[in-house]
Amino acid sequence: MSLYFRFVVFLSRRLVMWVSPSCRVCCGTMVVSVGLLLAFTAGCDKIPKMSDLAKSNNKQAEDLSKEQKTDKPGTAPAAQAKTSAPTPEQPKVRPQPPKPAGPDPDLVIGQFLKKSPPQRTDADLQALTALDSKLDTITEVDLTGSKVTPAGLELLAKLPNLRSLTVSAMELSEGHFQAIAKLTGLRELHARSYRGEPAALRHLNGMPQLEVLDLAFGARVDDNALTVLEDLPALKEIDLMGTPVTDAGVPLLSRFPALQKINLHKSRIMTGDGFKKLETPDLRWLNVSETGFSRLGFVHLKKFRHLETFICGNAGVVDSNMPGLVGLPNLRELNLSFNSLTDAGMQFFARAAFKNTLEVLSLQANRKITDRGATFLKGFKALKELDLRGTAITPATVAAMRQYFQGAVIKHP
Image (cartoon, rainbow, N blue to C red; front, top):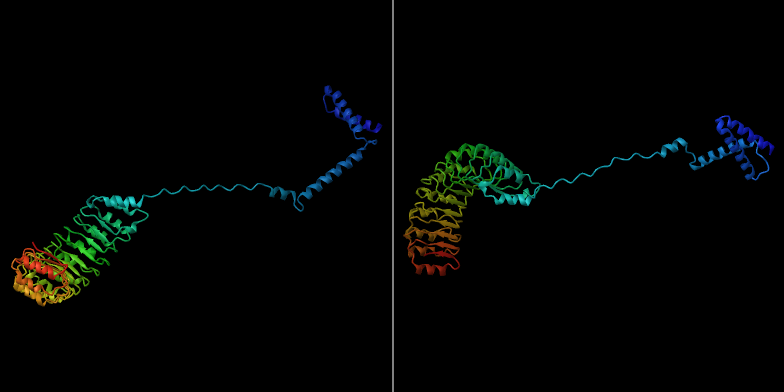
């Protein structure tokens, strides 16, 4: 124990050298007390030497080093520090907000259709063609009397199934027809009452699918206008009603070999002689009412053997014209109303080639046709409609005819 006390005294002397004089007594007392306490509580009867304490400290350091190695064998401390470093956070991707829904197609189309054609504008066409869907449901557009510009018409190219366009009674310029020419899928063009330059019609040439061209009542659609129309390979119908087209312009229609329907009602056909040079072998429908066709035109009808409808009302037809009709084997509708036929002309019906095909016949206002003339209609079993108003046929004969033509509609006062 004397060695231990010597050690404590030595330690206290060294310690008090580093503290202030006022604290030396307290520090010395504390060191002595701690030393006695450790000696008695250790329960050992041998005081450890300084060399033993040093060995003990070295052993504890070795044990601590072994524990660190056994925690992660084969891993260097630097590597452990590196692998334990936190992974940097990835930047968060913010979800994109949904795109705002476009206008309702049904609503936009409905609003367009509710507007009358003269009120439709470029802005309406812009809204219509800007839709994301249902553009393929629009097959026809009517702009009659509107002020739509060429730029507005160009928007219609976005309608993939547009088949019919009406631009009647508009102030059409050359630019309008240039825009129309870009609508390559168009099959019907209605441009009634066109008053622009005839030369502007040339832009329609080359439209591959155009089947119907309506130029009725065009004040300047004359023979010169027909000269600029030369390349419409699919054209089947042309409406020239009320135009200044003459007999000289009729042969120009031969440029359209697929033509099946020609309307020259109220045109300036004076004699019908222009049909002599008309080569449209598939012609099926012809209207020359209120013209001078009857003077020379009937003799040229026999070459149109596929003709199914012939309308020649109020055209000065007389009995001598009738032989030109009898050779038409496929005639289904014949309108000779408001002419000057008599019973003498009616007798040609008895040998008509269309006796088995004729379904509709109008003899209205031929005031000199009597009961005798009606007898020549026997054998026309295909008749479904017969107009005898304004003739001299009596009610008794009409009653008998109703019995004969069972199911047919017979118009008579």
